[in-house]
Length: 322
Image 1 (cartoon, helix red, strand yellow):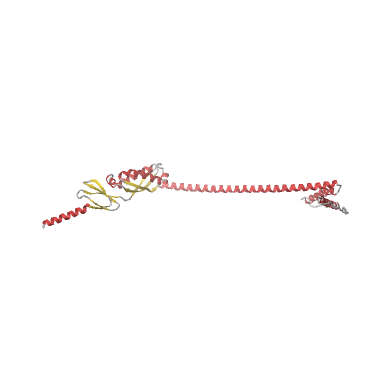
Image 2 (cartoon, rainbow, N blue to C red; image 1 turned 90 degrees about the vertical axis):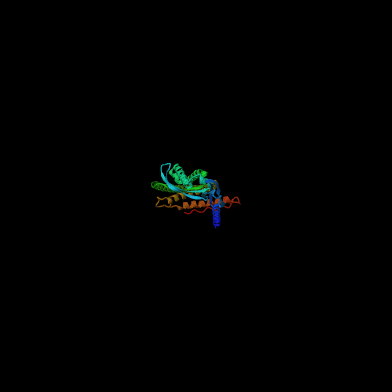
């Protein structure tokens, strides 16, 4: 009976030891194995068997990406302005053994390292640079912290500045500056608009002046052409009259006298100072002059038509009225 109990006890102890030596590592985790307190190997996800009473699990490491919140702290910038800064760090353990045995309290170490580097980076920049160059700050922090945590078997994937809070007086000054800058841009835009409008008006005036000048040029050209034609006509008329005088026709002389007479009478009648127009009593002279003009015109017509045939007989002069 005692032997049976002893055998059962040994079997139970063997089962307990056997099940205790079997380890199941979940996905995203790695276990370090220690033999008599010394690291020997790392267990990957799955089932592993340890040597009973000799090997044991040392550290259970999380191999998934982790998010660390960096507490807010006040930092003095290069231009002696205080600003409150906090951040977020994304890390992942690459080497479980290094993360377990090369640094004590890995999370706390990374948080302190990030805070000190954050003070260094922000303290080397002016307030305006800090507020406008977050990407530059993130890049510098990532480079510095990733290089520092590499011996710990940790990969820093990203660092993001979460919030930047300047003092209230600086915030008010920035608001006034932004308002002044916007007003300045508005004035510049308005001035540019007025400038463009003035240029457009000047261009329009220029085109108008050019068109007017071209119109005057065209009118002057046409006036000159008309005067040239009139001069040619007068020259032709003078030639005909001269030939008539040469032939002894007194109507040519009457033409010039009548023309001057009619011009003088027209000027007298058109004068604005003349309220009364005196008509000469002897109108027969004027009528005779007009008749002479008619004879001269007929003679000119015959002279033009002489090139096509013999000249027509000259009509008798009209009798003078008394």
